[in-house]
Image 1 (spheres, rainbow, N blue to C red):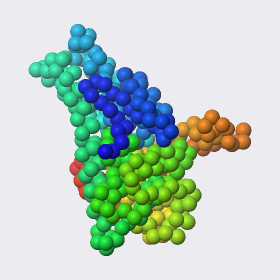
Image 2 (cartoon, rainbow, N blue to C red; image 1 turned 180 degrees about the vertical axis):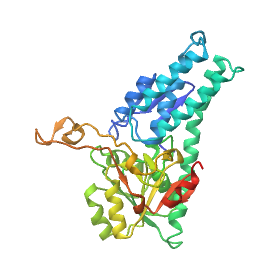
Image 3 (cartoon, rainbow, N blue to C red; image 1 turned 90 degrees about the horizontal axis):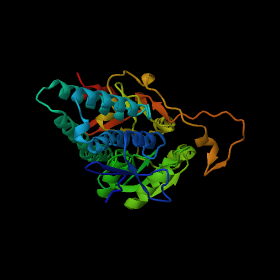
Image 4 (spheres, rainbow, N blue to C red; image 1 turned 90 degrees about the vertical axis):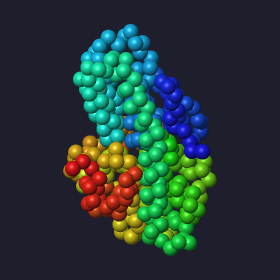
Length: 355
């Protein structure tokens, strides 16, 4: 059974505190929108799909807590929810999934307000139902991504060949509602007994690879090896790596992809060494409203993530730091973008979006 990073049941929401992994598995209660914002901002929960799900589920949590007598009018409820939804979007700006789900919810809320046959209690129920469906949809989409990605790679190798792949950051059950995106592809390859070895990077400075991906790979019993971020070129030169699988926090219409810092340099190295490079993400991670990666806002985080380890400063005092959380990989370096609807080249991605 896959790890559960999100546990939810009828208004009760808890998340696995990923700041404590792998040393300790501890679940944190999310009792409000404020709790969700803090958990997302501090990276107790991370991964674009998981961020969106936890943010939206916190709305359901508050609606369950709200007594019907306090729901005076639909308009008042709309004002309150719109304020909370926009607040959630400010928690982390780069990942698009939360912003897209918020936009969908805002549209549903407007529709319910305008429908005179819908009561304020009906409105509350409909919103909760819409949010709760995100959990099952995410798992379903991830499993589809796993199948599509595995099939796409296996068409490039002989039937009896076990593949060696590399992944960066964390894109598994800990970053989603379950199964995972890029790690979901790897999980599917393992189910088919087609994995020889998985290499995962440490993913500095937040170490999501060594703390989280390594944890998931060991938990699943998948043959795996941890490497430092600066070992990728040497690995490609020394070892036959068939493909790189990474996730995405936002994909532009042209296929440019924002993902965890360090992804871009791996893509450059993969291109040089002739290694296939796949981006794995649900269509909810594709922002068809922007033409290229130049339009993606890149979050910059505290210098403490670079200068301090386990509370101990390791960098010289007075040194300036630059700590972008993400970089943008140009579409020209990407072999294919794997979604729940299929694997397409970056220049075909627009065909999966709105006309």
